[in-house]
Image 1: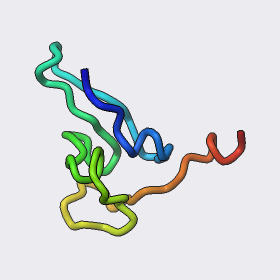
Image 2: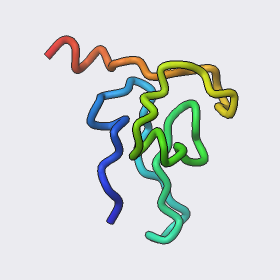
Image 3: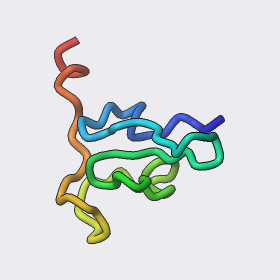
Image 4: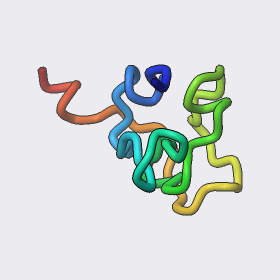
Length: 71
């Protein structure tokens, strides 16, 4: 079982969730900037992804989800 990623607990609007190719060994945490897997230093480390790093698929950084702001 994967640890809960910080991008989920911080409610990033671009967070997609856990994806896999049919089994637990291929699980990866994904978002719109990292559809093939969010780097560990963002998902579980101290990088809050507030600025572009240059390795994103799309030029998106952390943005708090509107659904959390309106609750």
